[in-house]
Length: 372
Image (cartoon, rainbow, N blue to C red; front, side, top):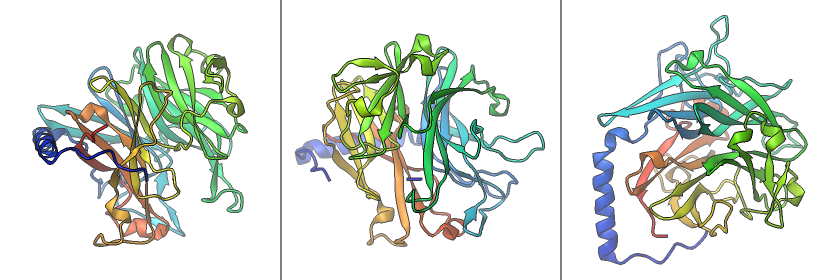
């Protein structure tokens, strides 16, 4: 899967105070800072993945959505093809300051590992991405993907639609979850609501990347009362600023002039601001941006660089020119006045996935909240 100037610096005294406070908060919450250990030596052990969206459940658990997931007793790559399933999940809890995470790779009737979210279209798979909760139900956005000739898709794949998955009242054992699938946007739109999702008021908002031009971010929404028929009740923000039925990417308003296929958009009531965490839209950038807006549809700031991933810096020990990083997103449920986000690093040299165990799992960063 896949430089704006910094804000005016705080005074040295205030920055020192703020850093000290954040260090204290991070230390106090160290047990509840997310971690993603590899499970070696198990037949169906979780050995790395990307995406890493988190969705808080009403009972205090968090559901983690993972993309292409390596599994087995050890990482295996044959003929440049990793042993993996296309998506998996995790369920985390934090009790008495202790972080706990259980991975779930779904098994078929014969006990073989399969993707947690099963494709509903021939010769395709799902990248499961963000999600939201409505009532007792968990909803997950699903981006349809298929193989494509290298000359038509830069990395050998292309998108083919967007669907939604509903898990009614997810219980403690993810293997027993019932999953219902709902079509949302069919193949051919070249902009598919999936990049990030959030509930605001009476609507679930799902953002889409238009796959042409500057690759802007577009906004769609579904009234919570209309989730029984998501496609029928889908609306999009049109270029005139009005919400219209259906989804017409060509007539949609650009919420962000340059978007991202993966990002987070979350509201911070203490700041009275929406925050977006994402990689710089420039291809294979090492910079993670923070953008802000008074409303989730904007206007969004150009953003400030808040982090330069060390794995892509030539001065970093162990630097590999084939390593690239992506999938930045925030996890506010683990914050205490600071900022918590994840990203994932991968390699263009696929066989290295089997030998470099320092890549291809979510990296966690906890840092002071930057001045906005």
